[in-house]
Image 1 (spheres, rainbow, N blue to C red):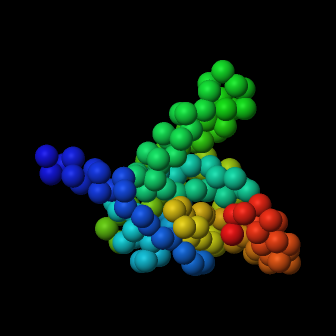
Image 2 (tube, rainbow, N blue to C red):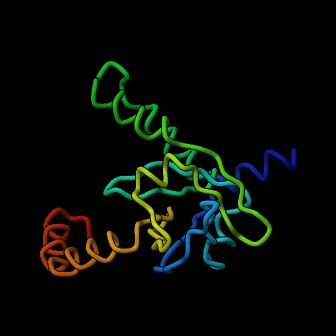
Length: 159
């Protein structure tokens, strides 16, 4: 019974991951999660290839929500099948060790072109891991058009 209560709590828990941190990727492909993030994500997380050439990290509860949403899309449509293969095919469960490090699979390190310095970015319900220089370049481009993006979102009723 208590196990069911715990699962329901985790699925309904709202997390807020914010901030940008530059960390080192060690020779074993481990990276430390920021302390603030560790408190939110728990001991097991899901890492997958993200969009914009970064990695996405989700809590197990968030991954369940995403998995449920993606499974609602028709498998009869080629785009849905392709995106599901992309997300689920590259996903892996990883444990956070006792000092807050995670081991990134080599195929994901290669896919995101990660080097010795990485940007660990909180994006509300997920963590993104970027090659530091790619993150800097992306951020510079977005900062230059932030006003235009806000305008578009405002017109669409998103803000």
